[in-house]
Image 1: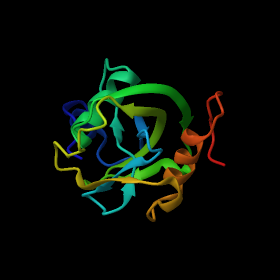
Image 2: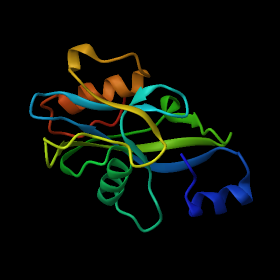
Image 3: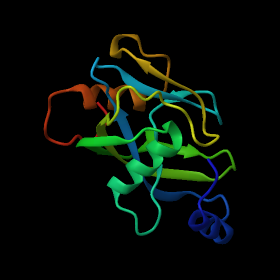
Length: 161
């Protein structure tokens, strides 16, 4: 949730105006088919681990960094699920700045299933493995992307439906 030095610099110039920002999300699935969800500290909502890309960082590097910071887990990326944007991805940061997120979604698995997830930063209230049939209430964009990640479709999705 703290802004990166890059975003702090941009925000110092444009204030809270709408910015389009690249980000990644990760659907982490264990061998039991459960999905790891994060309860966010800023709004209490459940959702997927992920975050904004830093300049010079690849989507893969962002996925690994964000998942490690938010869950303490090392992951193996399995595939790109899709690329998402639109009104469902316009959000207001806790600072008041507005972002139009272009989200690259990955499906991944934990490298070490015995390792318990634990937040290494202050972004998470809880980290819980959920059965896809028993997901907690969360924004629609997460539910649909989880469904996409669990599907057998090999082509990347590009819209919420």
